[in-house]
Length: 174
Ligand code: MG
Figure 1 (cartoon, protein in one colour):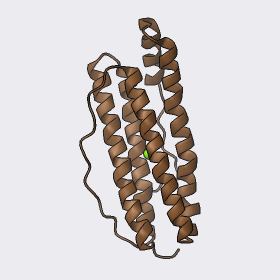
Figure 2: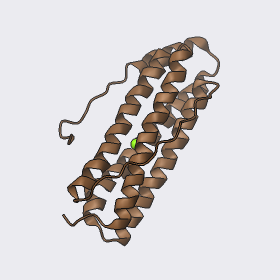
Figure 3: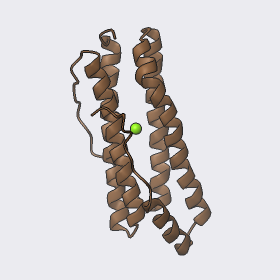
């Protein structure tokens, strides 16, 4: 594989920052859920945070495989003031839309640079992954809107999301 060019190198370092920030944001959301009587939502968010760290590492590995040294950037303090589970999942959905935009921008740069290794080796995977990430968050938003203020419904959904499985692809490169 050719050495990673300067433009993608810079943007991929920024994307590591974005993915680690996503983990930080989801941990912050988990904190609110834990403190407000929703252990299942909290647990779901912590697993989501772990997934974000894996996303960060995929870029980390790609930069390294392309013979450049990762440069870690500053992570800002995430929001932590929310009023309801619906507000949080709407914020999570909007955040994933933002991340999808960043991935699409990376793909544009990869194409401008004719970087096929970046396009096929990592960015195509992320384009597909983002479709799933948006769908997952939006599904919960839809359910929460249906449930409204029904305490029993909220209790059930909290239990359902708490049972989310978390597995790491055996092919994942540590
Ligand atoms: Mg991500």
